[in-house]
Length: 124
Image 1: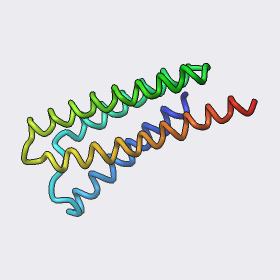
Image 2 (image 1 turned 60 degrees about the horizontal axis):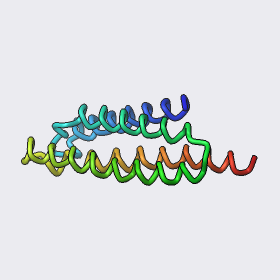
Image 3 (image 1 turned 180 degrees about the vertical axis):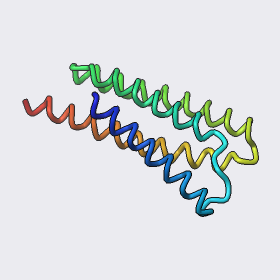
Image 4 (image 1 turned 90 degrees about the vertical axis):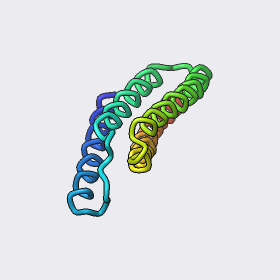
């Protein structure tokens, strides 16, 4: 669990730094106006969901809970994106692209760490 948190925070810092660098080098024209909110929201939600899923030891319940968390994530993240679009219509594309980039990276990390846990528990 601690390794996941460390990797997640390091990944968030790297992506945040690369975003700042890309803007400073003028590789991107506009900086995401919801930069900090998106970073904090996704780190917090990914960590919370991972913590719940990591505690589950029953494979049948794990699958059901994972599917439930995916559905809840899609609804919550859709609502968050809608709020971003409404609040900053001009910068909506930059904010949504930044959000989706973080979402994909954090979801891949979550799946990789959960797979290691599940694969390790079935072989023992």
